[in-house]
Image (cartoon, rainbow, N blue to C red; front, side, top):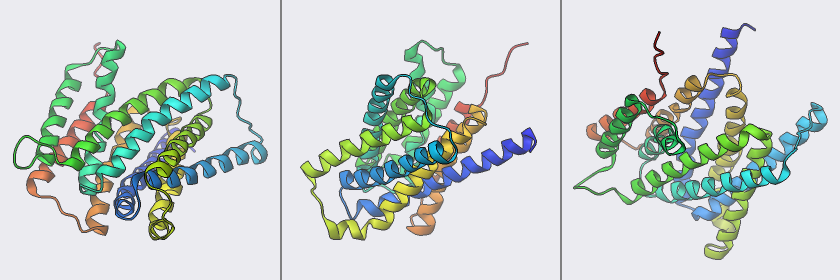
Length: 296
């Protein structure tokens, strides 16, 4: 397989992961109406943990490629902090999605693609004028998409916006810890701690409602198996092969798929104003990921 063919293959594969993530907003929206956010997140995460364990066993005993853990304490610390941000972000997203449309949730969550490079400013990295312009476009798009009747965000939109910031911290944390550990092991530890946090709060605030869980089982399985298990694994594999710019642009398709699946499955619609906001935000996301021109 030629290099160009491999690039096309992995780009399509990552686009499939974006489709899973985007369509998962529908599953989360349906699940949010049936079970509490801690219950949904806990069950979805435990399902993903089981999948990741099976993957590691397959890698070790079938492929004969055992994972090397030279810094177990470092790995555990990385998994804990990545999970903390993922847990808080996923929780706010799951709560917020009950009060907004899947299209809005998808686009607002995708603002992490703009927020991540901005946050690196606080880590000593210079930010270009183009990135600042992308942020301005994102703010304008968010205003058109979410603001109604004055200067106030709707509850669901505000929660998902905070979720976007937390996802940004999670992405930066994963980027830091993944450099020194097996990415599959890091994903497993992250999902394990997320499941653990969610389970504790589930028992404290929600309890176990078997009939509700059965009613939401389809959504939970979809989010656990496909969104958490399959899609995160695809991301890990494909980002070893793709240029970061191509990968980021491809993953941002999650927003488009969230809007499309919300329209197809839940019959949700966007007004002209909201659609304009989506287009502007999507433009900001793409613009923020374009490579800088190198001076000759």
